[in-house]
Length: 427
Image 1 (cartoon, one colour):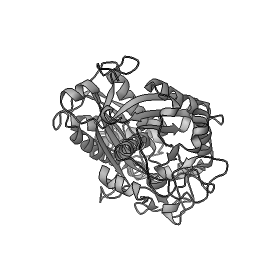
Image 2 (cartoon, rainbow, N blue to C red; image 1 turned 60 degrees about the vertical axis):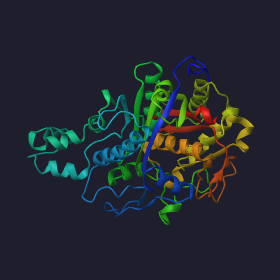
Image 3 (tube, one colour; image 1 turned 180 degrees about the horizontal axis):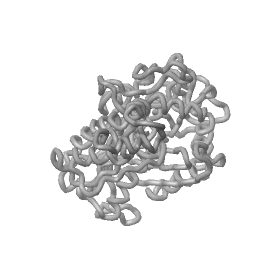
Image 4 (cartoon, helix red, strand yellow; image 1 turned 135 degrees about the vertical axis):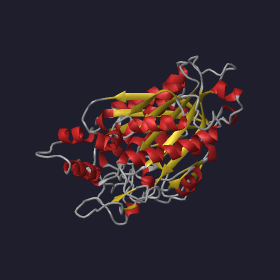
């Protein structure tokens, strides 16, 4: 790294100065890190709503924030607030309600859920269709409900709470969304548009309607008993993913800006790679080409080679097709190193946090670098002979980790990869 703190392409180095996380394992970095490295699962039987007749009755829900009934946007906002508070407080940047940077936020696509639809339907005379429900929601009487289900509403509230600069960016690129939010923050800092960015991925959208939709796609695990054993990435007996909830937040800064104010540098976002394939609405391209290119682009963006990577934080959903595609893609990028390059999936313990996953897993990747310990892939008891990987099985592994590639591959062909490295003084 040069004396001017520019990367190999002459761009500002992007430092991480704050991290925050909430998952079904609990609130905060310490709680989550202790649970992850102990191999504990946050996946459990759903108690928040009736599950009679559902094929999947488990999830990694976050149940300790609300007592009364709530909607997905309300929980997503609460999760984002807690993660962002932890990240901003750790960074020491700005003051309460006055964050001197922009907000890039991954939020789940929202629409009215069944209880709200039923409430509105009772207020409408005659035939009821979805357009009629939207018209009713826009009336003065139901205005708060209408605003609740506007896509940009969560980010607007977070921007107001933290006093971020400019118009908040709301985005949803399926399961790569959290990583895309980080990528957008990195690019804004590199372009000199801002010296800091608050990047958040959040998702609190586990409800009956969502479970049914994913079940109709045959995407969810139906191995409900025991719940903690259902998510088993890269295992031969994997049968689908488990929905999860959570939020991850990162404060990004121009490295020189962070140094000038005496901030502690937690890590560097060295590279980002993004590719879309449009192969299918839900399936990944079977040749893995977009995932391969996304990883290669991220490494090239970081000015690194495959040999520089110490650990892969896998997308690792536990679906038969996605795990096979990711393993094949990693082998294409890293070659024979895959036999000894550690890889693990946090989703085995927290489930798939969907829109939040890329941000949550970026936080965990940086904690892995800081602590020199790789969280395991639990439930890895039946290795798949067709997937020859150095999966970290069931128990955490101590290792010197300076560079991580974190993969996020989403529905609709959205593929985003991040290269995260140790701070210069420890690299």
